[in-house]
Image (tube, rainbow, N blue to C red; front, side):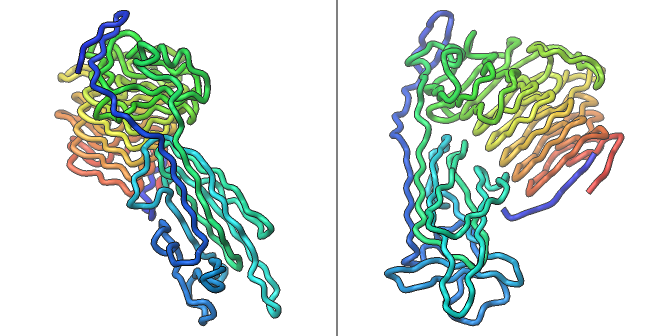
Length: 455
């Protein structure tokens, strides 16, 4: 097991075919688009950029650090990159910029930029410019190079969160005529306007479609145990988790079940999932066969089994099962972003009942999850449980910019905030707040048996 703790910058009631929907009027949303133009004739780059190297006057003696400079007059000016001892200068943007509100929907578009070499009769021109892109300022693409030339270059931007990030770094080059065009994906299937239930809309969807769910509380068949069926689609609420709820009513149902090799393009966004309950305590040993089965007591809010969906801006609360009361993962690799997991439970509640793991989030059997900018709070593992906030067994998980607080249990619980165990486990905690958790051992983080390497 490896532990890393590095830091880095960065209501009318309607009954339709057994469906119960308590609906509030859906808020009208205009189509969202975003355009940005920069010809570097002013000094906007210093304020519009996400971060940047120092700006330095053209022609002045170079500073003892990488730097950016303007070349030319205001009628025809470019932005130059200068290195220091081979360390390149950097310029990074967030679109829309900080201070402007993104749509908090999936967006896509492109960035266009021209790249050239500074001409000088005395000095041979040479240099390079590379870029990397991100949808969350945490996970960055491998760097790619833009060779100086006639251009311009078009760079693809997309983000399920609604904000796109790009970082340029280089030396000995100039950039000009930077422009960005973004827009949100339009809904193609709507609930309940076009389809009675969320599952009906998903069943009718094809890969690339967007299923949009109007404000309201959804319950009953077709609105719980919802299955993407392996489709690369976006299922989103129209107005966010405060207005759109999947109510499982504590009756042996969960919100969503991913089990058909869904990938990152299968996106769930903007729901509250509450009162999921999956009974049972039987969790096979590590080496035992594990056939796919929704009856497994894993993930009472969301269950990811041999799948890798993207889960964004969801609230999972008051859910209970044996492993992963809020979100449970078996051989799965989800990306979980901007979510709140709270007041969930793992296992039974009394002394002598089988212990549970991961009241908030539980991962077993070689799962590999990225959990970014999430709140995991007030979750309770049962007596002798493992991991009030999160449980990682023989799996890999990264928590980045998360708050893990007020989790735990009465009794001999290990790992009030996080529990990690098993020789192949890898826990990474980056820029997180872990506070107010309780446990018999390891109130914040508990590292279990059979540790491997540690850093």
